Image 1 (cartoon, helix red, strand yellow):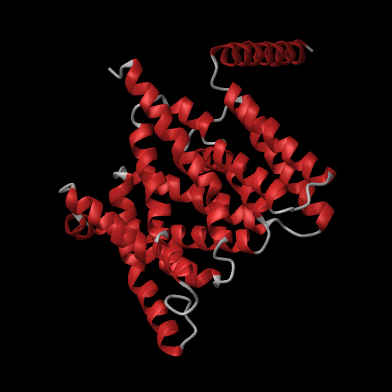
Image 2: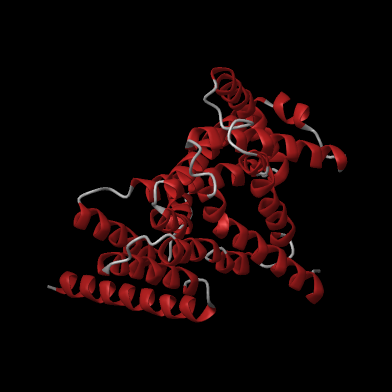
Amino acid sequence: MVTGGEQRLGTIYTVGAFSLWGMLPLYWRLLEHVPAVEILAHRIVWTAVLTSLVLLLGRRYRIAALVSDRRLRRGLVVTGALLGVNWFTYIYAVNAGRVLDASMGYYINPLVSVLLGTLVLGERLSLLQKAAVLLAAIGVLVITVHYAVVPWVALVLAGTFGYYGLRKKQMGLDPLTALTVETTFLAPAGVALIAVLGITGAGALASINPATDLLLVAAGAATALPLYWFAHGARRIPLSRVGFLQYIAPTFMLLIGVLLFGEPFTGVEAVSFGLIWLALALYTASHTPIAKEIEYRIVQRIRAYRQSRSEEQAAR
C-alpha cells in the first residue's frame, strides 16, 4: 500500500524527470558546435560509466548475470541499438533547428506504443483509442502533404522509443540496470570514435574549451539523472498519472523550440499539433469509467442494429 506521502514524492520525482527530459534541447544546443555523432559517443560512454558506478555503490551491479542469459543479451543488444538511433536523432534534431519535429515525435509516442501493443501483443483497442490513433496519423499526414516531406525525425523518435518500450516491457528489467547494459554494449564503439577523433585532432574533447569538456562529460549525468528520478517516481504513483505527466516533456520541447529557438509555428503546425493533442485527449479519456460506459452502450446499440438488419433480411 503506497501512502499519500509516497505518492506525493513519486509525483515530484516523475515531474522532475519529465521536466529534465523536456529541457534537454537547451543542453544539446550548448553543444551545437560539436558534431551530433561525437556528442552521441560521449553520451553513451559517460552514461555507461556513471550508471555502472551507481550500481556498484548500491551493490546492484549484475551485468555478468544478465549477459550470460542469451535471450536477455540479444534483447539488450536490440534495445541498445534502438536507444543509440533515438539519441542520435534527437541530438541531430535539436542542433539542426528541428525541435518541433522532436516534440511531435514524443507527443505521438504513446499512441505508437498503443499501436505496437495491438499489433505485437494482441491488445485490443477501444473505439476512442482507435479514433485517437487515426487522428494522430492525420496530424502527421497534414505536415507531410503540406511540405511534401515526411516528418522523419518525429517518426523515427516515436518509432524507436515506442519499440524500445515494448522490448523493455517484454524483458521486465530494472530501468537503470538495463540502461547500464545497453550503454556498456555501445561504449566500445563510442570510445573508439572519441579516440580516433582525438588522435586525428578532430575531436572536441580537450581541444575547444573547458566548458565544452564539462558539457560532454556531464552528458552522462544529464541522461541518467532523469531516468533515476523516473524509476523512483513511477513505482510510487498510478500508471495513469505517469501517462498524463509524460506530456510535460514534449510540451517543454515545443515551447523551447518556438519561444527560445524561434522555430516557425504556422497554421499548418497548429492544425497538425491540434489533431495530435485531440488524439491524446481522446486516448486519456478512453481510460475513464464514463468513457468506457459510453463506449459499451454504443457497441451494444451497433450490435442490436446489426442484429435487427439481419433479421429483416432473413424475413425477406
